[in-house]
Image 1: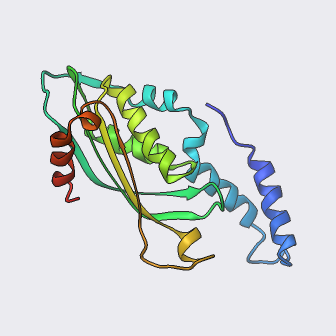
Image 2: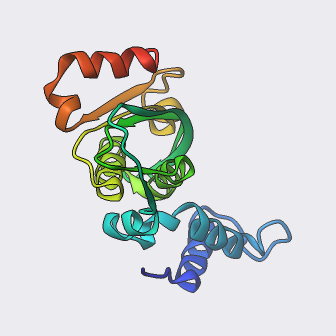
Length: 191
């Protein structure tokens, strides 16, 4: 685990305010650098950990002789685009895995999604990272992940197109090689 240099973040935010022509010592802004540093410590928490560390944190599984598909769908999340540090929002993650003798607690799946989302990300990488961590945590090779979301770098700047969704997928093992299983997953989540 690595820690952030919160003082450097505070100083940097103060300099940004000055560069924007603001007075960082005025009443409404005097605490802003500290607030932003505290917010970054929270919303970028996942950057403190590698995928392996996250998998280890959430690897408590239960021995279970179940070989059907386990689906967790419509997990809401948000992240930040690494290109503009802009919000990726209205994000929705659905995933499935085929257990190999053990199952992971359902809340652990949601926690993995949450932790991976708390990084400067590309949606494509976020999708793959979630799948890879689920594979490591559950010791399985068959995972399906679909992420859809809106990007404020598209909706509020540049092209300014609201309502557009980006969808990314990641399939491994049986989900990649078995069209019927993949269709069953997609039908189960309404895609």
